[in-house]
Length: 249
Image (cartoon, rainbow, N blue to C red):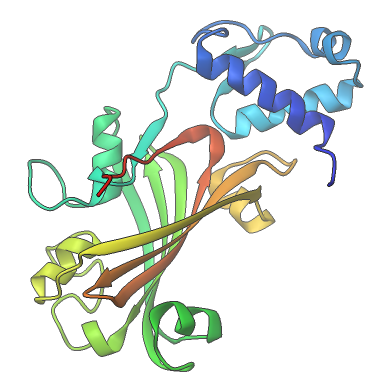
């Protein structure tokens, strides 16, 4: 098994201290020199570790003063409750996440007709090359990029309906949009992994030059066992907390 690079191990330890409150909001992070002594590493490694935390939005530099723990709250992604029908507030799951954190949700999107490649076709249970709606999103919370997502929907389900173009109608979010055309989403599946961000993802999310880790979530919505949407979601680890509360049958 490959050994975790020293800068990521240091970043993980500091991240844990921040999340536990051992390093409180507004508190100064140990200097590069202190980290060099504490972990027996070079200045470059210490600098990379701090850079990872900056990219995750956990700390921020103050010119001439040092690096401090940010007071901004992380968004919490309650995987069960965020997709529930009804109740007050927005129908967009991301907007709900941001609202709970007292932040403003905005997003950019680009939708186009496409043809399903083999992996997407398998996830959607359709033929390879079947027409789909592909939508690329970049989500921002209080103006800070915090999530990327690429969504695919079979046009055999949404084509020619008022929700064919995901951001063109009044209904927002997959569950609400499918409800609008009589497709009752009753289940979803998420598969989560962690990996370094790609160069494109790092640029879109404002991550540091060194590869910061991201969560990658492969999510699929189902209606009576039929896949109606699938998405690849990318979240910077330090900016989002994933919470799963599952009912035990």
